[in-house]
Image 1 (cartoon, rainbow, N blue to C red):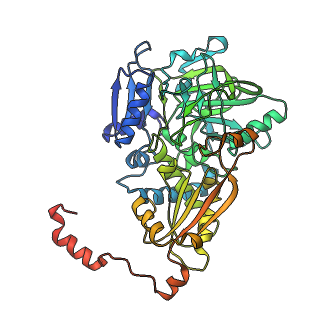
Image 2 (image 1 turned 30 degrees about the vertical axis):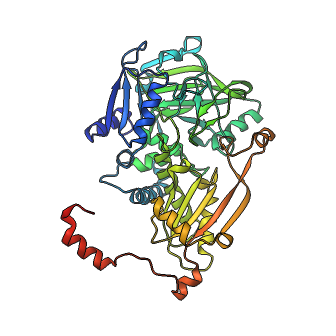
Image 3 (image 1 turned 90 degrees about the horizontal axis):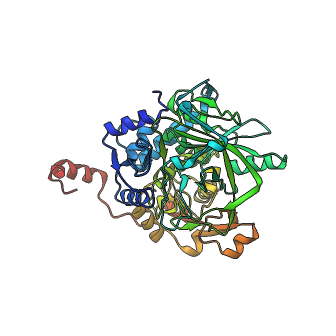
Amino acid sequence: MSVYDLRAWLDKMDQAGELKRVDGADPMYEVGCISDLTRHAYGPALLFDNFEGYESGFRVLTGALSASKSMALTVGLEGEYSNKELVRAMAGKLEEAEKRLSEFDYEIVEDGPIFENQVFGDDVDLDILPVPTWHEMDGGPYIGTGIFQVHVDPENGHTNAGCYRVMKMNKREVGNFIGPGHHGHTIRNKYWARGEGCPTIMVMGAHPAFFMLGSTDVDEDVSEFAVVGSLMNTKVPMVKGKITGLPFPAESEIVLEGYVYPDRRQKEGPFGEFTGYYGRGETENEYYMEVEALYYRNDPVLLGCPPCKPPHDFSYSQAVTRSAAVMVALKKAGVPGVQCVWDSETGGGRMWLVTSIKQCLPGHASQAACAAAFSYAGNILNKWSIVVDDDIDPTDADQVNWALCTRVNPIEDIDIIRCTTTTPLDPALRPEVKKTGVIESSRAIIRATIPYDRVIRGDFPPVVWPSEELEARVREKFGDMGIF
C-alpha cells in the first residue's frame, strides 16, 4: 500500500486510537445520527460495517478529518497541535508545496486496486452500496459527501478536483449540484457552451487528503493533485477512466464515471447542509449524471462527511485548511504582520473569518480584513471578516468576542460591503432573491483592534493579566497541583 491508500491511513488511525468500528447501524438515518452525535462529543473517526441487506465488507467511514490529530496524521505532521499551531503548520506546508508543484504533478499508471471490480452501462447498480440517508429530512441517500469530482478544462487541459454534493437518485443516476464560483461550475459550463456533455469522475472513497484539498479553494491554475503530491512528497499515481479518459487516484475505493448534460435535470434534495440547515428543496431541478462506469475495490470504503449544525463532520477540516490557504494568500498579497487566521467552524469554515495581525501601519487592520475576505479561499459566502491584535488567539472564540466587545466602536469600526459572492445554500437569502438567479450577499469588515493612533500613543488601557515573569514563576511553583 502506498501513502495514498485509504487503508494505510485507517491502519495509522487505528494505531493512534483514533478509530472506532460500528457494526449493524442502519444506513437510513442511524449512520448519520451516530456520526452527528459523535462529532458533537468530539469523538473518534467511525468505520461502519455489516449493514443488514448488504454484502459484508462494504463499509462507510465518517469523522475522518474532525480532529487535530487526524488532520496532522493525514498530511504527515507529527505530534500534538493546538488549532492555532495546526493552521500555522498547514500554511507552512501549503506554502512549501506551492514552490514544488512542478515536481509533483500526478503520474499515470496502467492499473490500480480501483479496477478490481468494473461495471458498465445498464449493469451499473448503485444499490449494492450501503449509501446512507444522513438526515431525516433529506430527499434521499447521498453517496457524495466525502467526495471529490475530477474535471479537465477543455481549453487549457488543467485538471481540477472539487467537492460537491451528490444524491443517489436511483441505481444508475446521481445528482451533480455545483454552486457558482467553483472551478467545477466554470469548467462544466465551458463544455456546455461547446455543445458537449461534461466528462465527470466522482471519487466516493479515497485517502482523506484528496477531500481535504478538494474542498479548499486553491488558485484556478493550481492542480489539487500536485498540491497533495507536494504535501506528501510523492507523486499521486493515477489511472484513466475507461469511458472519459479522465484521471483519478489508482487506489481510490469507489469511482463513478459519466457525462453531465445541460438538458438533463430532475428533482434533487433537500439535503442537510454545512450551514446547519436544509438546503435547496426537492422542487428545484438539478443536473444529474447517468453513470456509465462503476469501479470499486474489494471490500470498498465509502468516505462520508455528513454536515449538520456545526461543529459537523468536515467543519474542522474546512476551518483548518481554508484558514491556512487564506494565510498563504495574505502573504502573497503583501499584507505584513499576519499572525494567524481562523475561518471558524461556527460558520462552516466560510462565514466567520478572523485574522490576527501585529499592527505596523495606519490602515493595516482594514487592509488585512479586506484582503482576507476577498482572497479566493476566503471569498465565497464570507459574511464577517474580523481583524484582531496579535495578543488575541483567533481560534479562541472567547478571546475574539472579548476583542469585539472592548476594542470596537460599532459606528467607527464596522464597514458593510454590498454585492458580495455567496451561494444558493445561504439560508439567509430570501426565496425571491434566489429565484432571480442573481444571488449576492453582503459582508461586514470589523476592526476589532486597538485603534492604531492609540497603539502609537500607548494610551489604551492595559490588559488585566499576570506578567509573563509572574505567570512563569507561579506555574513552576504550583503547576503540579493540577489546578490550572
